[in-house]
Amino acid sequence: MKEVKISACIITYNQQDYIKDCLEGAVSQILDYDYEIVIGDDCSTDNTFKICQEYADKYPDKIRLLPRDKNLGMAKNWSATIQECHGKYIAMCEGDDYWTDSGKLQKQLDFLESNPDYVLSFHKVSVLKTDGEFVEDFLTNVPEGYEGIKTLAERGNYIHTPSVVFKNIIKEFPSEFEQSPIVDYFLYMMLAEHGKINYNEDKMCVYRFGIGVYSGAQMLKKIQNNLRLFTMLVAVSKNDAIREIFQQRLNRSAYTLEKYLKGEKKIFFVTKNQWMRIAKGLKNNYNKPLRILKKLTKK
Image (tube, one colour):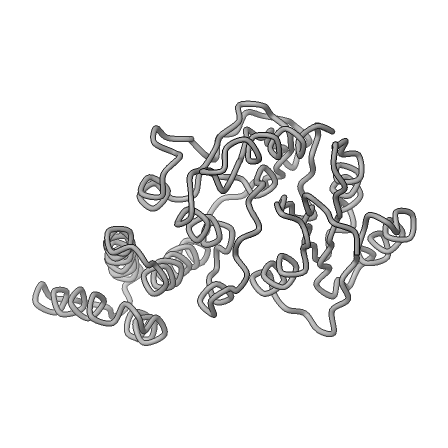
């Protein structure tokens, strides 16, 4: 097996209309080093796998297409594909996004190689709406102090997946990772425990955004996802101060769920004393995430 400096890690599922753009962006990279493209197709039922196979046949020395016996789901597909990457660094991209700068990987690689105290590099993106219009990124706002783990914990995810290159230092993923509904942010938090985060102002990829209005059911799903995410992060955080930040965000998410359900006229009333007991229970059981989720989602 040849030594590769960086792995392009791509996951995909039923993205036949977009996967060619993704793969073209990957194979067009120009680097001073050998690199590989590792594709985790999660048992697509359309022509996605066929298209990936065509590219793997065309670039046999560069592309490894991973077979799947069954559908894993996004989180497990990410962890399984990342762990198949041999590079010292890993670049992430989902099958519906794509890279637009052939020097993207080299630029980020050069920075990380020259700055060993950094573990992750990300950059600006162009946002592509479903009507074909390219717009400025209206989804994220890179804050001051973006380099540190505390800001990432407090402000949430301001990093787009297709812009990320990181050091391949996570060799084992906790079970909580595969239960998290937002795995990219979970991964960034794990990485930020080991070093700083770099931001590059160059636009070097396209992030596709599906336009839509949140329905009530979608809003409830968003709240539930936050509950699950922060529960898992509380459970795995090694830093007490960071765990406390996630504890507070978990408490706020639980309170938001209470307000939402009251607005929906469902039976979910919590007195002040009951709320204090819930908060205490969350704090005392941070290392038992499934127990917390069961209490929070109990009707």
